Image (cartoon, rainbow, N blue to C red; front, side):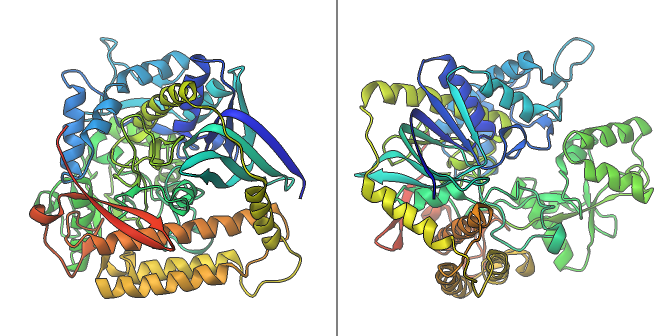
Length: 551
């Protein structure tokens, strides 16, 4: 393989929301050299690729950052870091105003105030939000972007990061990137479980299908402390299109109703997990399918919905128009998605301090990769990118750069070379991925079991995931694109093992559906108001319990 060595001050892995804003912050506040490595293309990558129609984390008039933190903690049933939520919330207004100055269209009313949607959201025309963020980063003179470079591993010695290794998807170049500080901004993990829509439509999912948990996997392999992987995220979505339901629930006040027309949402609770749980429970009781009641909304409201979905999930608008069934005439059917691991909605991810530093020295995490602070959404990811960038600049002032050893380079080159071969493999990455999703669906609380699992079923899941991991060693790739598929599968398998370990460790049901443990069906604040953390050492996952404390 052709190799290329790069030295930089700051390496940002992932050019999504947090990564772009971190690069802008670091570049505008220093002369340090910043490199962004993006697996796709920075203009249309990550969770904002298709746009968004609201900013769901904002301090609206009459509210305070503490109010937002309190809401997040309540929604997470107490398992959240107040310090992370507050430091994030205090920056929500500033990052929003910066985006507006850069050209993001935020809707305003007759008095010139932002148009709100609920207590914490504001409406935007955000189809272009990702190109806008990409341009902000790319126009900085000390920021370099490598598109279509898949980072496969980080280099860590003595608990300190030295850089990372990557492969150019187009030309197969092997990159050795030495960096004094690294930001993990790779997003969360989709594709662990069998999705709602199989086959050629499997990309129709709630979370970005190209986010494989790569950052999690790299951290896990090198002994970083991880947190709350058992608090999976399951989205309540419009059936088939998997389009957002918040636009309906908050935009036009649509209530959740069963097939009998009964409003059931108050019966089960209104937290994020309870809304999904109520829908699953009604279906299991034979009162499904379930809907959001939109029948009877006004024509103006109907037109507003059609436009809103064009900014974020155009397939929903197209479905209404193609079927000739507009939302004012027919209720919108809803369903829960498969589970995801994502630190922007739940508390899963790297265990970080208030500077967003992980337990590996010089490695930082932001956005969906960082744990402890649920409900951060787009603006929260921007805020965490800003915090991490400022922290990395302070770190660089205190620490001398270190290099990557020739031994480590040779080992990673050898691994990539082993997978790159013209010989055939008995399996393809896609086949093993489908097997992995079937295992997780059946035994680790997927859609098939109404998100339920037991300790025995988790034992079966763990055994079979380990078997699939062993089979993945025999995979072969004919080019760099196929090589990326192998690495993506292996990343997901690593994350699956950690998810299973965390689900087994929390012996209660704190979040219905998110972690529905049939052996321990009740919530237990006396023993389990704790963060379930883990560290991978000596070939096994060590569970660490940390008490939740205020402040």
